[in-house]
Length: 170
Image (cartoon, rainbow, N blue to C red):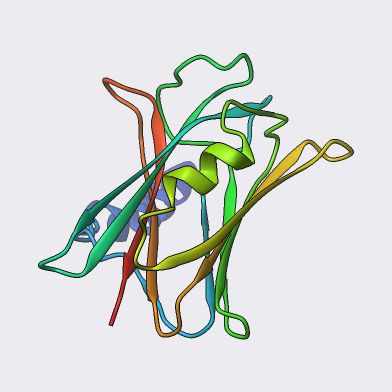
């Protein structure tokens, strides 16, 4: 009886010995939002801060890139993924709203944000709103009609973590 139990266990374990390891998926291009849609990313933590917002443009490709530097709760650079964010593209009026959770600090003021986007071909207005009750921060970009958006995160390795927004004008 003892040997029968050992054979049964061995027999049941055999299929797992022949299992093929799962293939790693190839990186997938980030989803482009057009009209309406939402994306999210980042990680939860004990708190984060908005360190900087930069805008660059490639006129040949008709792309503007917005880079948002995310730091730790003390305003220092942060390695790894940025804090949790939820980005939603709305249709009428066309605007992108990025909500950052657990972000009570921002080193960027609304007047600075307006200056950053003054020369933008895709952004016509900006706003930054902090909610002290739930320690969240919202960044609103009013967009020109038919602007497509791609939002993704970049883990900080040498510099701080980032949320990157590509604005694709038609």
